[in-house]
Image (cartoon, rainbow, N blue to C red; front, side):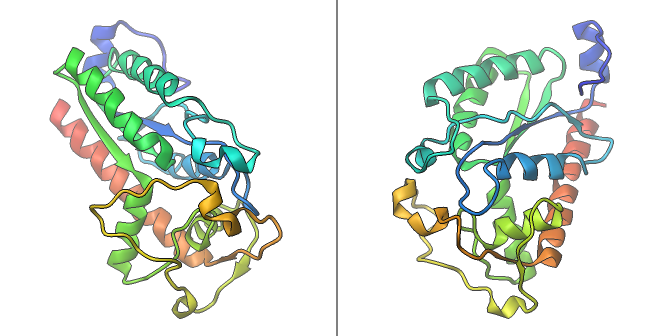
Length: 237
């Protein structure tokens, strides 16, 4: 999108494909890079097809749950929500179709509120919000794999490894991968902060991964986002 040539809003609305707005975070990931969410966002969006027009990744969002662990950059929820609303208002002057792709859970609910505010002002606009980690869970379920999706855990490391961003201890057999911790019912939201999971922030712990699993997750998610872009583009034609 950085290379898009400026045109009038009317020309853009008629010609531009659905815009994907990726939201990441810079936060403490223990032994993984603090830019993990950003690196994964770049890895996924760089693989999207021609039907998706990707806006630059928003690197900073709301990471208050990690603030006490240090090495975290966060905005206040109020400021971020208003900022995101203004970004979406700008994007919807160029297209009526936007996919907000959240790679950080702390931004998800604020993205929903910001999108609803934009649609209240511009009801002709369609905005889809995709929760990256919910999509990862769906992919793992389809593959019949019970894997750890905890913060800075096995699945996150596997995706990073498949993106060639980290080295980790390769697990050959997926049978050794277990779901860590109690799994809450899907209708329960349990806000957590870093001190609930101090083990995740230990920089000296060994991180296991499976590059092949990470590559499969990336492939499945890229296909799904590309499919969404194509479907939205067809609605425009």
